[in-house]
Length: 356
Image 1 (cartoon, one colour):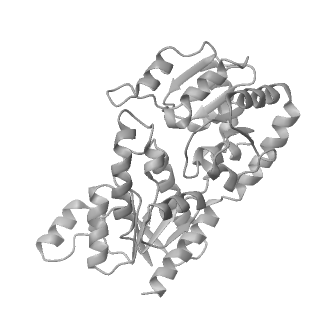
Image 2: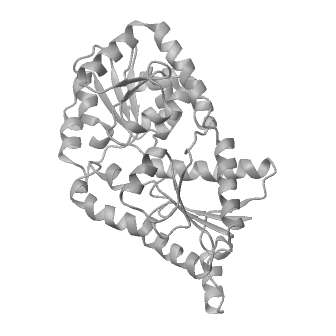
Image 3: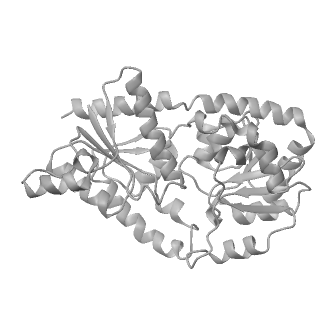
């Protein structure tokens, strides 16, 4: 079984969660193959992975698209639309992976809220073309059913690549010194925008006597929202916006308590990464986190600024609580191994092929 697992704009999305999710899919399938599964994965849509070869095949009357038994697409742009159309013409099973919803598009950049309603209509049309839509959570599945999307939907965790963060501790002193961090550091990882809880992050920091650090890209161009510009240009005294860091494990090594007051997620790979590092997590109480995590066991779920501040202060003052939550979080992350993801993906593809 040969699978085309394609991410449009992959080079532009290498710092985004979609890029991480796609990389993990490919790695999960490679691990499944190493374990004996009958699966081969290619990531280029062109025949033999080469545009020149594809053009020659096209001129010779043959398909320029890579030979595949299943086509699995991870984005929603024009190249993905074209490949979805090709899958239909070639009678090839089509999997569309929902990494984008109109809900998580909101508050991402300037003008995103105005675009979101039209995006919802487009996504309803696009995802409805699939033989199967994959979502990272049952929560996102429910969202798509409300659109409604006219295709079967299955939830499969994005998983977590433990190897990508397993050496985080060796970066601790380097990164704390680089960004002048000390004590119990509250931190977030990922691109900085309001949907991720930027205002809550800063306003809670003003109530807590600890260092706060946000490791991730800060937009400064015309697409940056006024909220991002305001907070990042004049942050609270105890808040550091580091910008992009080359060594992701460094962020998890430098921080002590993962603070993520995001307003909307389809799953939140970054939370699983923090948990894999054994970091206690303080998260906003939203449905998708209730699906995967348990308040008081592997995280603390909060709703208000006061609750966030209280949780962070408790963790700052109680190393035993930090250790207990961190150890339980590590066990939760282990349940989302790429080996398990690979098995589920292979099973999904086989079911689609058997139904042909």
